[in-house]
Length: 448
Image (cartoon, rainbow, N blue to C red; front, top):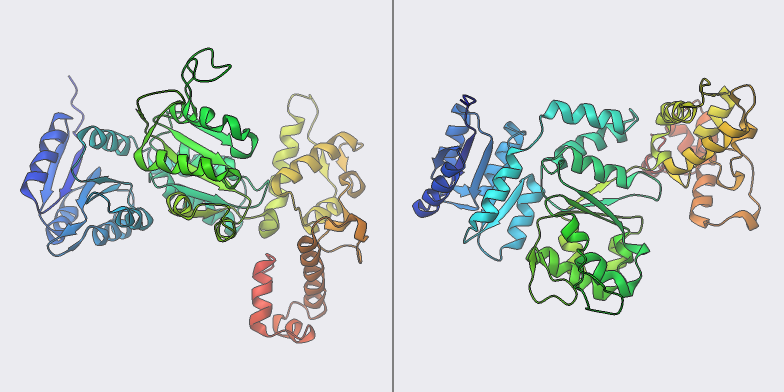
């Protein structure tokens, strides 16, 4: 006989018919329900009881559901909240997600969708396990990385679409996987797709599937990426590379939560969480009319920025040590060590390719080094991208003017700081900069 306590749901709505519908449906799911007619009653129940989920209407007699979401975020951050909004109130739903809501439902309430949402919310992993797993997978103890881990923890407890921004090689796919693995969809598929690697003529078939005979070569029915990710997460990497016609189809699939296979007559309902990423500036792509503004609005509900490696130089030593241990695994030999000068060279290098480039540099150096010690020469770092070494680079070696100018700026600021014993005010005067401008540049270059 199962004697475990039943999970408790808080329902907040001023309409008796809605409350009764939710109470009956959740009761059949073997859940205990507590109902409140307004914000005040809901807050009183929250003080007295511990809940596993809160369902709240947007419009309440003495306030809004958004206020309740904010109240719960501040006082009960581990409690998932789902917002119930009027049909078509997309902007309201998006504001709720930005405020920290787990997900949203529209009226009239679809009971199948309600049961899916409740089941998903109640599968949320324990917070302690989340932090431990993220710490183990996402290395680095710098302030930017500590902040990133906190944001992943929070976003894993939501169903909001997330736009993951960051430079190439900074670890955007790992961040997407962690958001998926720490959330209620962890047992379901995580399907990554590089949007720039699919030929445009095959995109619709790849995303939505096709029926046998729908085109030359379609010898059997094939499900698409949306169907493969059903119940889980679809990660759209390099989403800015999608051609405009496909952007229209993607927007419709996200809005309708349904897809139609190429050659199919009926739509298939799909339940996927969308995460996306690109190294491009999506705002600039929208301004240039290469990316649809309405799709951008749906994908960029919450933006999560992954810091570049040069913004967290203090993590390089720990990252390098971990990578060298991994390279030594299976060789029967101890891991190679970095000579102090080699470590200093890594810390002063700009790493335009970020963590991915660090891995490649160390793998090459691990092979080239002698006596299990990696010297500076073994690293073979490109002088044109160095952060604090060398003079003016050979112009034939510069493939990114912004990167080069930033490396020169960094070198001059470091030199001024060293000459003034890191007195920022004196260094700013030496460079004919205002203190405010100096502070901005230090932050931009990761030197603050």
